Image (cartoon, rainbow, N blue to C red; front, side, top):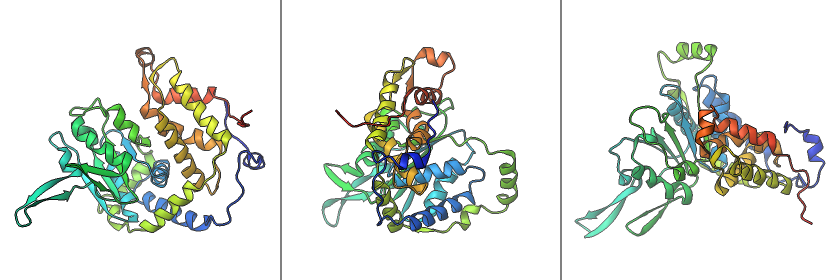
Length: 341
C-alpha cells in the first residue's frame, strides 16, 4: 500500500493537525539543524541519509546503533556528530576484557577521608561513543541498560544522575565476524534506531581518496551548536503534534509485527513509543509541527528492524527484518479517523 499523502489535504483535517503554535521558532531550528548536517557531510561522503537519521535520533532523545563491516565510517560518523555540538564527549573502546565498572565508574576508598568516593566512568558525558560494543561480554553490555533507559547509574546502592542531553552512539560489527557477541534483545531494544552505513558510491569514494589522504577532515570540525541549542530543539520536537489517527496507525504497525507469521518476536511497546518520537523529530526537521503517516513509514525500518526476530522458515527463505517491515507497511491501512464511539 502506498502511504504517500498530500500535505495540504491532511493539514486540512482537524483530526490530524493541531492548531499552529506561534511560539514554535521554526527558523532557528532549521538553521541549527542545517549547520549540523552540513558539518557532518564535510566528513562523511555520500551518506546524507545516515547523517540525517543520526540527528533525528539525537533530537528524539534516543540512542543510535551503527552496524556494518569495518572501515565504512561508523566511528567517524559518531565522532563527527559529537564534534558538531559543544558538549562533553567520551569514547569507550569495547573489548572482551572490559568490565562494567570501566563503563559506569567505581567506588574507591579514600585513605585521607576514610570513606568511599565514587569515581565517574566514561558514561558520564552528553554523548558517549561505544566503539565495537558487541566485542564486550554480555555482562559489560548490560551495564549500559540503566544508563540508556533511565539516564542514571547505580553503584553500591547510590544513584548518580547523568547529564542532559544524553545519547549513546554505539558501533558494532556483523555478528558473523570473529570475536563478537550478539547483543541481547533487551540491549537492542534500548537503541532507538539502527543504521547500516554501506559502502559509498564511486564518486563519493573517489572524493574521499582526494580529500582524506593528507589530513582528516574531522580535525577541521568545530561546534556549530551548543547544549542549550540542542535542548531547545528537543523541546520543540516534544511539542510536535501527533493526531489520534497517527497514533492508531503506529499501534497497528506494532500489532501487525507481533501477529506476523514469519516473526518470533515483534515490536515492543517501547519501540512504538520510540517510533513516534523519531517521527516527531523527522517532522520537525521537515519544518512541520505535526506528524504525517509518511513520517512513521519513513523511519519504521530504522526503528523496528533491529528489534525483530525471524523464525527459521523466514530465514531459510531469504527474508530479512527489513523486508518484513516493508511487508507490514504495505498491509497496514492508514487510519484517517480514530475517534472512539
